[in-house]
Length: 57
Image 1 (spheres, rainbow, N blue to C red):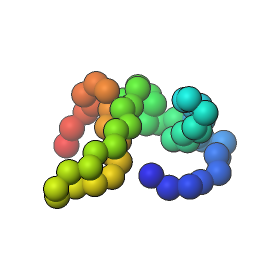
Image 2: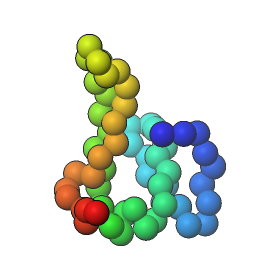
Image 3: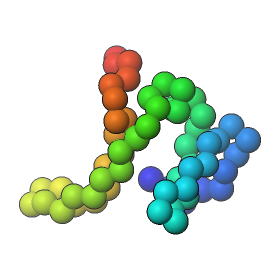
Image 4: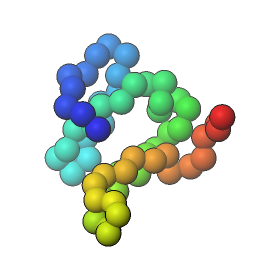
């Protein structure tokens, strides 16, 4: 995740007062996303993943 300004090709979504910006192509490919924060022994921070499976390589 980064701080960025929306572009013409972006989709802006506001959730609980936070603005999220992503390329519209990601919305077409994956739909909804889950943003989670974890604080574990080996990993601490945010993860972003599609709420449903997308095409894999």
